Image (cartoon, rainbow, N blue to C red):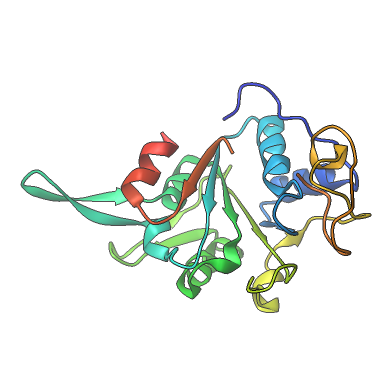
Length: 212
């Protein structure tokens, strides 16, 4: 969790919508190209709510195992190591899946039960269902086709989240992105958002080290 509040300039009542989603335990979705302030907004809201945030930078190799956890060899024994998603579920942190559409399909499958009334995570390797902590919140972002090669989220997945409100487009260097002054606009349709714990998924052991 950050010590000083990250600067963020609200532009479309996104703070109110985020707080509503948090209080009602509804997953929150951000969309927009890289550099428009999505991570800064989540940092700001985590600080406002005084909650720990764990950020996962998803990519094409990110799997559900990277997020949930795996068995590792420690000395002469094999032990289970929770991944960052499992840690967030148990501790009641905000988990931010940055560019979630870039991850492997099994990641989307893994988070489905956390995005509905069940609010639980199934750990298949242990055969356990873990109920989410009362304060747990799932936040995800994706780039909706602004750059060639970026993947989209299926409508069936998007409808599980409450989307952030949008407004006029802006550059990531403007006040609405949390910085200083406007310079130029981004492609039409982008959102107006500019992590304490950021993990490039792919190593559960390194992820755990960064979340503690």
